[in-house]
Amino acid sequence: MFRYAKEGDIDQILPTLFQIFDEMELDIFKELGNDTMAQIIREGFELPDYRYGLDHILVNEIDGKVAAISVGYPEELEDGIDAPLVKIMHEHGIKKDSIFTDKEAWPGEWYLDSFAVAPDMQGKGIGTKTLEELIELIRGRGEKIMSLNVDVTNKPARHLYDKVGFEKVGQLYIGDHLYDHMQLELNK
Image 1 (tube, rainbow, N blue to C red):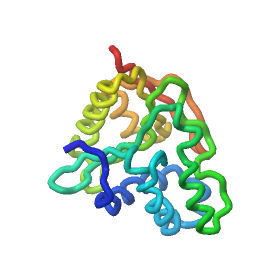
Image 2: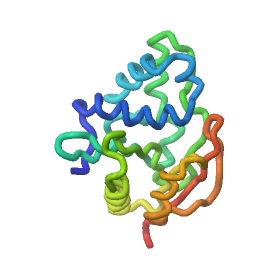
Image 3: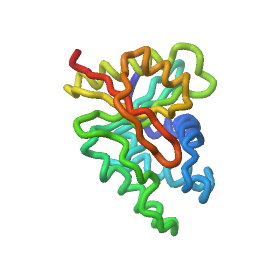
């Protein structure tokens, strides 16, 4: 069942989300450690308008388990999407002003910020099915272009995105990693 995340999903969402953070090798996670960052992000789940707030996370639930997650939002929200978390970081004594410092989405896009399948559910076609359902949902909202960034070294993810119709339109760095910026025209 494809649905919005709810509070009870948090313990299942975090490990899947951290697969992405581990691959990104973000400095703040190295500096503060995964446990501290998990606690901070956990506190942010219930904040409206936060990148990883429950209102931006969709899950594919299979047999009562969160099998896949997707996090996304329209590009026009990107500039302020992490402000709620910065407040939490400051409350924890962390004087950083952001986790992500690089612009990831282009104007006019609905941006798929994060997409991952739970480790024990990989290789079963769940990623493809979830992504196809997400595309239909976003298309149904009237969005014109869906985008994402995929690490140039992540061949399995790139294969999935190519398979469902995304096309490379550019490249950018997020942190120290090079990513292909891909788009899917939703009104085709």
